[in-house]
Structures are given as structure tokens and as C-alpha cells.
Image 1 (cartoon, rainbow, N blue to C red):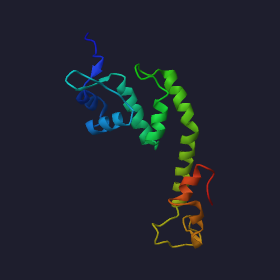
Image 2: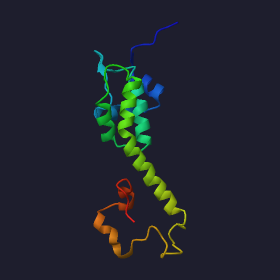
Image 3: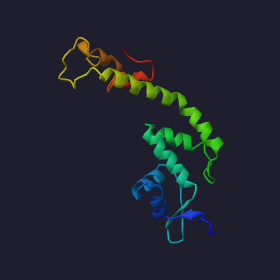
Image 4: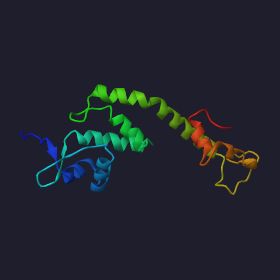
Length: 154
């Protein structure tokens, strides 16, 4: 049985992880992953980078920002593969934030159920109507969605 190499080229990491070369370089520039350079200045990634990449992609899929991901990865070991205990600790820290995001998405889904794509048939019962621009006081963007994680705006 052959042993796996300790380090991988950028092409091997891209093939194995499904993360494009450009994204690998981007993540490295942002300090999310790291590589060492050969004497010929080629990147070599430790095998543990595959788990970090899986974590990064999953965290992005659930809507976490790169800043949140970076902060979480800073608590993990760089030179070894994170353990089950490492991942467990990290996931517990995000549980409240993820629950708030799930709640916001469910509220959005439930409020859109009666919507007919805004050629609105009933502005009196519409959950999205903003009579008199009263939501301007909550700042730019979609304040109902932002506030859902903070208890919501009715």
C-alpha cells in the first residue's frame, strides 16, 4: 500500500477539493489557507488544507462571511489536521448565528407565500409594503432581513 504525500501542488489541491486555482490563491492571500514555496517558487500545500477548504466552502454555503470564517480558522491548528474536538468547538460557537439565519430565512419564506411577485394584489395585507418609507430609519439595505436575526421588524 502506498503512502500519501504530505504536501500537494496547487493543481492537486484544486483537483482534489474542487476549488479553482484562482480561489486557492485568493484564500491564501486572505490568510485562510497557507502554502510553502519550493526552491522553484512553486506552492506546496499540506494535506490538511483539504479539510480547511471543505470547511471554508461549507461555511460560505451557509452564508458566513470570509471575515467570520477567518476568525474561526484562526482558532484551529495550522500545521495539523483539525480534530473532531476542534470542529465541535467551532460549530458550537456558530450555532446561535446559524439559528438566527435559519429563522430569518423561514420568516422570509413565510412572508413571501402570499406574495404574487409585486404587482401586488393586496397592499393592505402585504408583508413587504413599506408605507411612508418607515423602514428608512433602520438604515440602508433590507432591514427586515437584517433585523430578523436581532428579533425582527414588524
